[in-house]
Length: 354
Ligand code: SF4
Image (tube, rainbow, N blue to C red; front, side, top):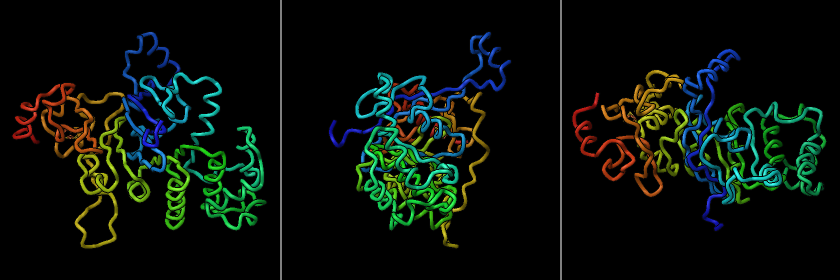
């Protein structure tokens, strides 16, 4: 491994669900040998996460980002593809590897009000993960980690119970509890969405500093492109189980290529009455994940839809660090995986816009 190698990587990662909601439906689906299409919550996702970086995964509710995170943490077994940690495939992990993975890859949840045990003091909440992972439990470590999340002086917090802390303080203790075991990766699942705006900014600053100072890789999952843009070095846009665009944050904000990304960006409120951005008005809802249309999953909501969009586009590089999954943005003749030739593409793009 070199410092430029990803610490965590997915290659064609898949996680599907049986859409049956009752035992009878499950039985019927089994008897008919799974004739019902599965829900493709994560459908062939390739991502790389590096130390000292915060990578965002953004999308509407139901796009698969939480399933992606839960698969990364090991709560779900992938149904296809691979997760590599520190260069090793997790499918080959033994019990000890998983134990170590659970120390090195940690998660911060959305709701700080449920994150801590109300019967534990802050000291005990922070000592517990050290004991679980067989690490030395000492007060110095606890002081140090509280300082790193700006809970100072630490002595003021150590003997407090969860109920004596504000929402922002609870989330800082929750972050400290994950940091104390010296992880390589932190998965942050909408970590500030339940906090007031000024507390959100303070927590986001803490995450930014930690990633820079502690060689951490933070994977930040959210539906809110404002917070993702503020904190992330790169953004991955997810729609119905697929990554449809990835780019460094500045580039994505300045040159969004996928029509879905463009609409998400229109949703960022701008505090300027003369600014010409209107709130996003993406027509319709995402299609039923059980009966997805053929071709591009976004086609029924896309303002740029063309005839060729009935064929599935491929995710390909449009720039050194920019990838987009849209027929508008690649040379079809250079991508033999694509079912359409560039000639066909040009023919429809010249006259096929609806
Ligand atoms: Fe729109 Fe077609 Fe691009 Fe899909 S492939 S986002 S439908 S232009």
